[in-house]
Picture (cartoon, rainbow, N blue to C red):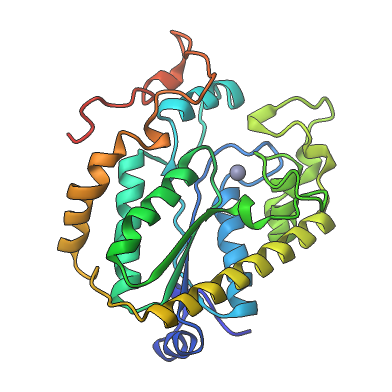
Length: 298
Ligand SMILES: [Zn+2]
């Protein structure tokens, strides 16, 4: 089969794929508890595999997967106390927001320097980080030629589990488990779902209703959504014929210093809690990294 994963391709394959369709997919996720029935890397295994299927079907190149993402801070820590509890080891690959988002600026700089026409930024890990990804793309777009579109993976699951646009995403419930089951059956084992229900290791309570065939249909919906989006972006690029000027480390550092950093305190991922969340208990192990630094600039 034609390759689409950047890190596995030869130079001539990359050049041919670029010539056919100058779209790059950047996918984001992390390792975190997803119930006893799912491999921990669900979020990025899912996002990356969907991007690969979209690139197979519609063209494009998929950037190397990024399994490090935002957690353990602010509202994420409070969520973890409630959903994950206090296992001896949680096996997470966490980063603070400023590290994650600055890395993304460098990913976009690479796409710009390679003269991609469109970059789709797809996060398979939720919480409010996706809103910040959308905001970052909007801040960057006036400065870059490559057309940007940022989205949480559930946005592309526009028909949802039931086909009527509801239940488009969850955490390790029937939606995510079905998606991963369809994409990577070796990473799902429904026999590990406990008979007693509950939310062990952050499992979604409706995980027992997971269905591989529904997962296949949702994957097909997402592939179609992403293919349409890529075509729209390529048309916009052709109409605008923009210059590619965000090509240097200096350009990234200047953007970060002058535009992103002053906005960072307003990012959703930087808030000490989400809406109606309670405070962390005094004895919670999640307190360690929960505080949003007042002077995070160091
Ligand atoms: Zn997930």
